[in-house]
Image 1 (cartoon, rainbow, N blue to C red):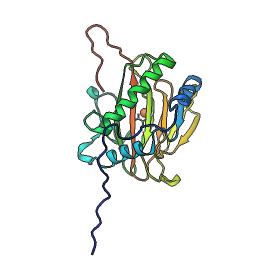
Image 2: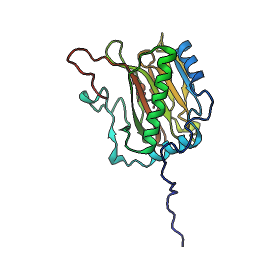
Image 3: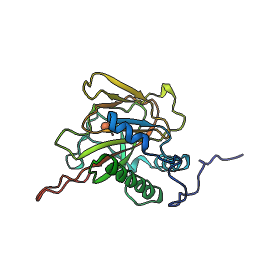
Image 4: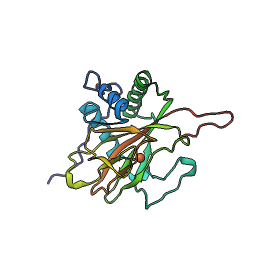
Length: 230
Ligand SMILES: O=C(O)CCC(=O)C(=O)O
Ligand SMILES: [Fe+2]
């Protein structure tokens, strides 16, 4: 009789594989942002790097995640009608997370250099939508009230099928009744859009759906008020 153990890979080692396979991984993305304010990029990271991020998120137990709320941490409230996912903020405490944050830092520099966005930092969390979870139509930042400038979501789901739902729907900047597109959360796909401009929504997922959602921010610290963290 044989016992089935889950396949376990060797732990990811810092800097062990190239994070990107394309020569200029940011170029089309920067053009899209400049011309339309949003972009969808497939295979953004290399296969091995994407796989290491998938291994990481798949192995987080629910107990180590928190139920996502609406708004920032200090006014954290869980509104089940609006959003139902579990999150874990990404801190540089493991090789794959260190390398991921390093890559996002190099992207921040490229964004500032090319688009003069003055981005100050990046915050991100793993997200798990279990079967039946969704996130109703919303905007990530209200003009003048937030320091979130760019929203990014990286999808980490093997063999996502059309029937699995969970699409990201992006709405028109000028008329949020009009859909710009529906994007299934397939492995390696990256969605990016200006946080203050695009309403978006996550359709009900019919199976567990993993992603990393992150935001590039500006520093709005003035006088005695420190910019809140997350
Ligand atoms: O997972 C997605 O496709 C979008 C998530 C989202 O909109 C958010 O976390 O603010
Ligand atoms: Fe969002």
